[in-house]
Length: 320
Figure 1 (spheres, one colour):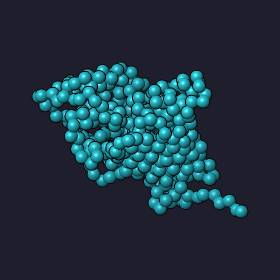
Figure 2 (spheres, rainbow, N blue to C red):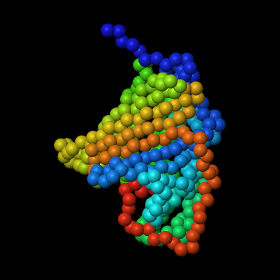
Figure 3 (cartoon, rainbow, N blue to C red):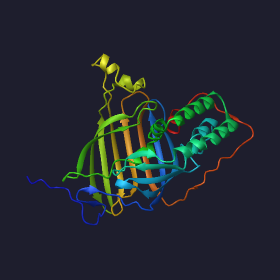
Figure 4 (spheres, one colour):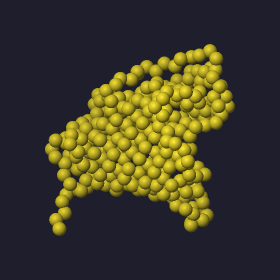
């Protein structure tokens, strides 16, 4: 039996000498984003909006800088938000944009570069939220966000819990084996309120018509057991006390479609399934679109504050 080695032809200029590279100078794209939550015992909930991602600088050591904007419009289950809670959940984090970030040579998120500007915008946004909404949840959110902005590292961790941003800025620009794959590890924010969960992954690359496709597949390989994650623990506890505790199980599968000449990401689709309490499946899609979105995001101030119910919707964790 003859083993055949996978190949990528010379048209794929972004892939040379077994390495995927990026030429993103002046690249700017509008992406349609959709995330779907499938929680046990309830119907699916999907959220849609648009992001603008613009390459603004190339730094030393092949690091890159980007500016991210988020459109004001959002759709929840194909409708504009109707409840005051849904409206608040989206508007409350709008001040974060424009968000400027730096990535490493591999494409991984490295840091936020306009943290001070965002922190300054929060002062005005906090006043807006207090004028426009009222309720215990509003007060709790403001306290939480104020705490997150006190420390740049804490705020960066918060940004990395945004599915769209975290998956977009992934370590795709790496060297692959002769068979065009690599084994690696990465953490994903599948459980709100706790540190991302570690996965053992196989990352492969191939040529699909006019694109390069990177596939990332794997399963949970975290020291924390199911009970640790259910209780929101950031370190193994029950798994140490009782080694027979049920291990956390789950899988992920992500497909990235990449321009074969520039290496710029055209879009991706990812699915995360896990056998842990709460959300059982999360599907995330992000693809380029030709529609423009506003760069300047202006909040409308109303005179009478709108009550926001204390009860939370589970998807609010992904907005804030």
